[in-house]
Image 1 (cartoon, rainbow, N blue to C red):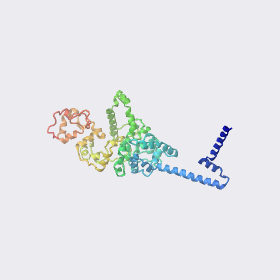
Image 2: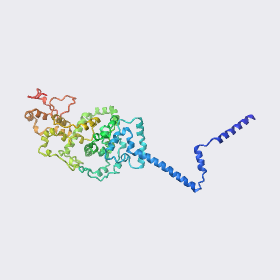
Image 3: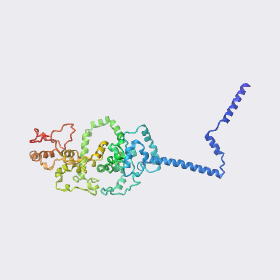
Image 4: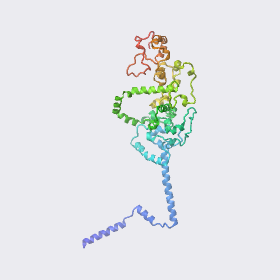
Length: 457
């Protein structure tokens, strides 16, 4: 009896503890709601008012957070975005938010982007890449541009360029193919937004770093695209054609050196020297088309007048045989010559730059002083100049006659200096870092003992 008595007492104690145990918050709240007299109109109005206040707080707070994360101010909080934010504030688009360009219109796209952006938070905490580069899957869509811009434009704002924007858009050509630098001045392609340079990105340096030539479309992009169209290609079909090269992807490509080396071994034409030679030859062919010296049956004319309404040819260029008489003008005004005749305007690729050199050049403008050596080097490396300098001038007559007749044209050191624009004096050294001459004919091949009355430097 004592055994069963103790068991019964334990059951009574357990029930007592459960009764004394205080119910949880949710249970108490549920009991309160359940005990409310919902038939009373006053209670129903109280519930409606409480629900309305809750919705305002929830949706208002969510909208506030969303708006703040969409603002340029939020983007500027991250150290790694310093260069992008500085260029944005100095651009013509500084009155619109970042998301108006970088996120496709629509709530679904907005929320999807917010989820994807969590990886940026991860990078910010664990360590960002050395350089921020827009990837192909994040390329700006034409939908974003057309929110503000009309596609019915036939000429540019300056009135000079003739560009059928509607025709380009119908071909699904991304706007950023031409307008890549309109906000951020192509800083990724120029290589000046890497981690070590971010401290130099401020409003004081912005004017020196954000050059107008990088904000505007690059003529080389138009030329490259048109040339590929004439060859039956549609380069814009590959999104990577319209976005800057990604250094991380380049490293991945470089890691497969074994496969690349095997390919080059079986295909000698892919050697770097021959690839460069073929590229230079193609550029020179395009230049000849542009100035009207080489005409082809092509879909898109490459002549300057095809795209430009106003071709400002200097008066000096209109004299007879200007192509044979421009040397003295080039020596005196080389800085003006390269304003038009420079490789960067004829090529799509953007050369890498050094941020300190840009800042120093901005404060110390170098004035050009006439110098035949500088002109000679420019004539050799500039593809526009070498297009003609690589060919035998018509004034040189036949080789057998010119061999004895050219002495009359090279009497003085100044005359010889003109020859050195195309010819080396001594035999070029293999692997030399000197600028290569357009021709392999050099003076000491025949003049092995030097020249008479030659001035010694």
